[in-house]
Image 1 (tube, one colour):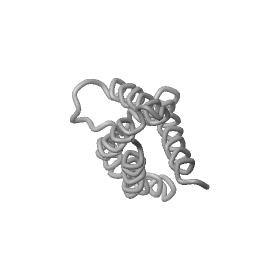
Image 2 (cartoon, rainbow, N blue to C red):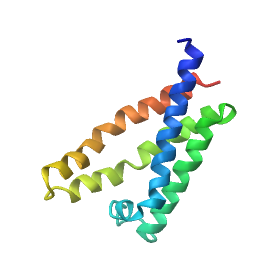
Image 3 (cartoon, rainbow, N blue to C red):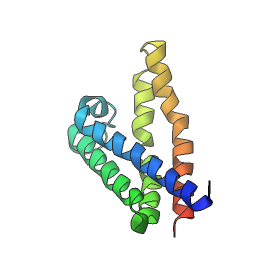
Length: 126
């Protein structure tokens, strides 16, 4: 596969992941409400919807070649910004079932390849 096609597929896959995640903030908001750090002002639902809208906007920017670089840089920042919610989830799930704990703890190291992926898409975009 030629490099440009491979880069485009990687960017579109990233956009799809972000779009799916963004959509679930609106279809399953209670899940996200529960992991919003309580130190943030406003209600958890406001943060759930705001972060979902941000993910959808970033997904759109990554999907469009003209805005891909900026979108991928925004995705990098977004993946870093949501890390505190993943830490909160891991802490909250300490007493849950092994499966639930594995899900919560697995989200923490997953942020590293997500940040790297978004950064790679940004660097490969004109």
